[in-house]
Length: 269
Image 1: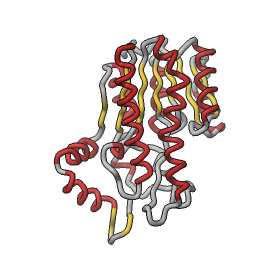
Image 2 (image 1 turned 60 degrees about the vertical axis):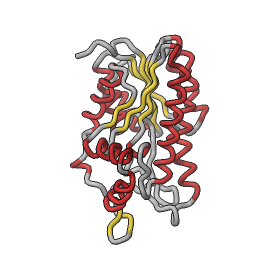
Image 3 (image 1 turned 180 degrees about the vertical axis):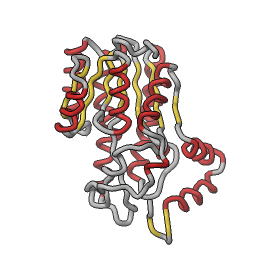
């Protein structure tokens, strides 16, 4: 087991489900001091009860709320002395075609997936610069390729990656590493929580989770990539193929993506 994370202070937003929870548990096992947040008090309580350790700090927070993000970073710095790694993992998806979707869907997704990362990063930044730490954004293949029925989600991830690339360039002489990871299709609660056309949670997913990369495996890849200071990380064969085709054969990618997401002219996935 690598000692890289031992005694490092790592903030993981959205740590109560899926990839976020797997990251929190692995980091604690590696000896890191971990701070995490979620919107469910019950899930945070269960996480804390499973890891009764002074090395875990939890807080109920909605990353779309700037004050919640500020409080999370301030309490983490107060409790652990600083922040070495910030993993902006919290996010939400959506499933609705533009013709049917309310504009509230797009605003809600952008507030969480884009502005939430800005808020958290801004309030952690001085400590990360001081410690020459790492800023990570958990993006998506949808940040490379616009996906039908997920136009608001794709927009938020395109925005996220452009913003991270900008601050990466700003901070490169200050010893801060910035990277973004694109998990591809991974077992996660994000599809169940995806917003419908009315900006309410779907509560189910039409996709076969059994064929996806387990969140545990995805977390291993992310932690290894942070340690190796990778620029980007694209996971799963489907994800890598999609990024490749989008770059070199965008017209064919349009047809294949349409075929994947639509059935009989209707959004199926």
